[in-house]
Amino acid sequence: MECRDLKELISASIDGEASRAETRRIEEHLEGCAECRALERKMRAIGTGVAMTEGVVPSDFREKLFARMEAEDLLPRRRSLFVFSIRWAAVPLAAAAALALFLLTSPEKGKDVVIPQGQLPSVAQRQPVAAARVAGELTPEEREIIAYLDVLEDPSSLDTPGDVDEMEIFAPTGRRQG
Amino acid sequence: MRTDEELMELYRKGSRDAFEELFARYHGKVIHFAYRMTGDQARAEEAAQETFLRIARAAFTWQPKAKFSTWMYTVARRTTLNFLRDEKEEGDKVPIPPGEEAGDGSPALQLRGPNALNPEEMAWSSEIQERFVEALQRLPESCRAAFILNRGDGLSYEEVATVLGITSQAVKSRIFRAREMLMESLSGLLP
Image (cartoon, rainbow over all chains, first blue to last red; front, side):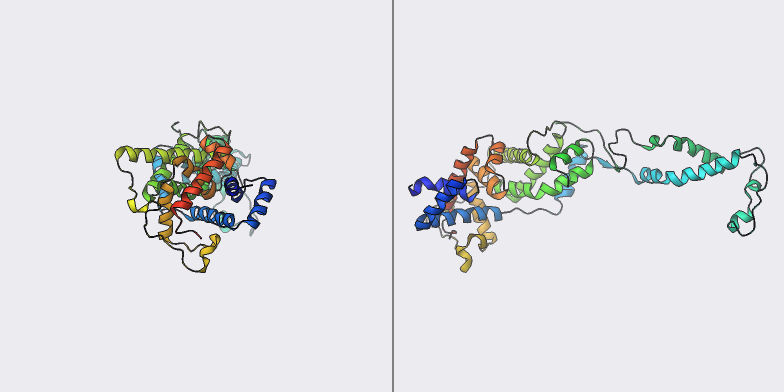
């Protein structure tokens, strides 16, 4: 095969696009042809040069792009920390509410709780539960706890409509199509 | 690790993290591609920004028929071409110094040192890079894009064919032509 017929194949071979048979043919030819060996070396150098030619990634590239995307409402916004913290505060809040309910509805309501000395923290010892309550009425704190119960009975009310993943902390927004 | 296509799907559903991951994977590649295509850093940055904006705008209509990266390069190439076309219409095209044409007797840059004969260890400098970028700009766009996508971005002939909308055989020919023209205009730089 003539050198000129092989040039395009040498180029493809450098790019890993020649078949096994073609590659073998090229290798055999290159062994005996100094001119094609030089050509192959130049072709490789050209490819290397292009790969090494790179632009600069500006340090503010991301910031600029994301600002433009947010201006066009193309980037989902992060959910506020408040919503996130309320979600994770639900468990201890539920425990506190359950305890309050128990105390309010207990048949023992209105009676002093007899607590053996040394089994409760000192605050509980100094302020027995029933002593802090006006008979037949709820304290403001108790009313607040009951108000929380409405939320806790329906945790989904904490979610933003349209959420994809319950654990994901981003709230998607409407997006323009184009 | 999630695939590009999975990340696109998550972004469509409202995940900011998914887009950030895609951005992290590809923003450098898109900037380098645009730079090799335009030969101008500022234009490359603009084109890369526009590419990501177009990807985000088209996310709802995107169908994972092809690889995400192939689609992304298709968008990047079209965006870059629009930039080049706009510049041409405005008469703002970066002029090529007349003395840069091949065979005009202008002094060629020589590689320094004993590594000159080893293409993998070519002594590289901003001056040589500049010569490469200028030589790339003199190629016909179809050859330039094919060669850059293959050698610069590592796309196979088949993937380049998808991006350019031509056959793999045509890609093979265009890349060969690009090599021939570059070898001629950069003859002084080569081993």
